[in-house]
Length: 265
Image (cartoon, rainbow, N blue to C red; front, side, top):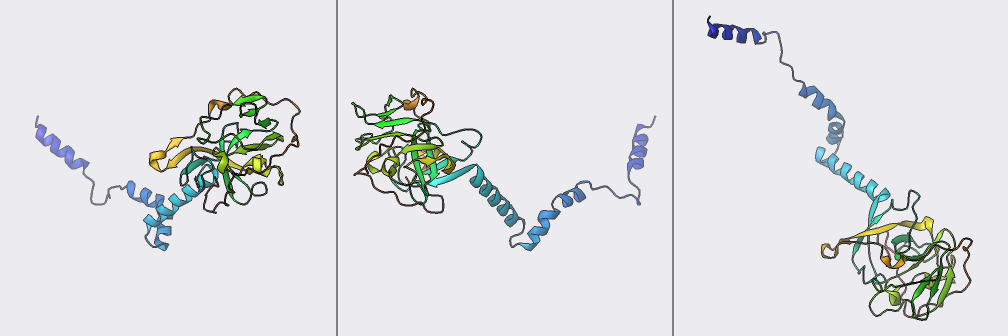
């Protein structure tokens, strides 16, 4: 058997005739996939590179609007944990699905109508119904009768407060304080203002979860254990007690936040 001849004949028979054209399955399919972006690219300077950058910017805008947003710390009212110039990443979905701020959370909120114009960042000390008092015999904040040891995050040398206060947090609001108590304008200083110094839940933008800049200071902002033993508020407690706080003489008023995402400390 002439095997060489058989292979030759088989190869010849497998070759396409002159009238047959080799198929190019990838060509038309690839062109159809990129037709839309190709047309847009023809209209824009830079072509497809510009289209890609615009899509990326749109994605980042959607993430910043609905999921995560960076804020810059402009003041020292949350030191020692948050320093001037730090950038924090705020989780805007943290309280969107039946979740509510918890004691110890660091939150960013719109202070318009309660604190002043702009965004602020503070620590949640009391939630709706909580009875918050300062100070007890040992100079500590008490929440629902439970003393809170704030030494892990309070600014070194600061006392929990230089003026007394005794409030019951209305339902649907938060009582917030800065960690640098002697340099923070917070709920204590607005008890006599409209809203009583409380932050409505609807004004909360999100929870600060990370310091992302500078890299050397980057860390996760965990909820401290100081509030773990605080009991739930008694049922029916939801109106302010009427005991206000005088302005903290050492508190410096925080400037309003810039519209580019700065958070007032």
